Length: 356
Image 1 (cartoon, rainbow, N blue to C red):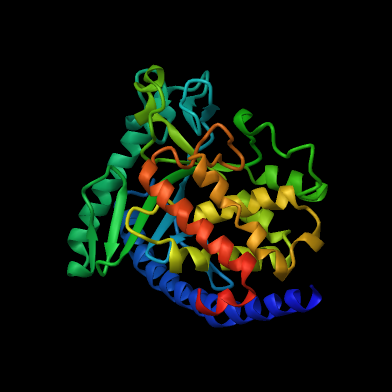
Image 2: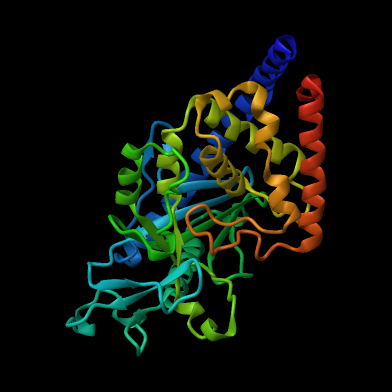
């Protein structure tokens, strides 16, 4: 038994060095290239419209606000200044989203975003998104990128296509620091010892962002307000949680991402890096002890197959939001078969990593 564990550890480490590390280096280089292009576009947008003030700051090789969805898909969150005149309202929105309402006692004319406010006093995510899309289109018409950077017109979001192979979504957002939504009140789970108590208050103090993205309407009652709603994002809080995770947990996430890229990135695949992160956070709760996160447990951590089989993956902070809600059933079934095949190989054959 000890020999088989040692053999698996050897092959996992080999896989990490030969597959994971090169993937990280390639993605890091793409992040730098994407960040440079987007930064120049945002600089010109800001010159034309100062309200869309934002910058991509680089820290220790990472570009703040730029999230890797997959090696060919990225998301940039542009945090705007809301001048503190809006209040946060979950009750009138669809799951995973919220409304921003003009605060009581404030004149609409005093708002920095006056033309984007609805008759009911809500700041419309759709109107902000539309204005930002118009500005980016104007900027691309001026900058000399030619066919290297194009703007897709199949969505109301800013969706850039770089060198025909990389998709970058640039999303206007408002930061909600030191706030925690009612829909995430269940967190942390009182039945687990992870994360550490010292980290919980820190994560909640970070808060979340409200993104101007296309929302999925889940019922007719809320369909009229979905275009004005803002989507909640906990990316920064999630990353802070991962910072307190052990090195083996983070290594496991890197391996999961690499396996996804190499074996689960088929046409119509419902899986991306964000799903891998959600999976890891759930597994951290279920297995809080560091001893449960050694190299011989990699196969056990590939629990995504259960989510795929039931066609549901709840958001870690927002259990009422199903991350597979818009995924096609045949794609989920195909992904489940592929994940099960990978899991079986890893569990039954310690040398399987040599050809994965």
